[in-house]
Length: 112
Image 1 (cartoon, rainbow, N blue to C red):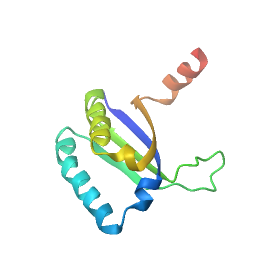
Image 2 (image 1 turned 90 degrees about the vertical axis):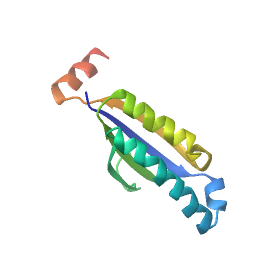
Image 3 (image 1 turned 60 degrees about the horizontal axis):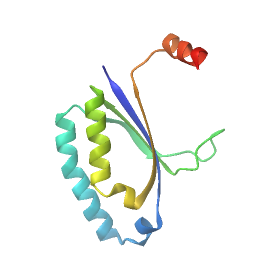
């Protein structure tokens, strides 16, 4: 069953202190690690800067939405992100869920 990861993240002072060359080096390592995740079926749906004017929006600066074929692939993504040192540089909130539909979600909300 398809699973999703939503990440909200903002740079920490450690990231802001890095020069451009160090930032590029960090992302080269991230890119190399993505090859194994792609082989597991992990794909980025969208990545970008959040809109600060959104009603009830987040204070986080960036958003990433990921899709994977199963929970194990999402866990591999989350573990890979952590192992990369990402959390040293970015304050991150993760949310994961299995694929769902509107009627099922309404049932979940009613049951909550």
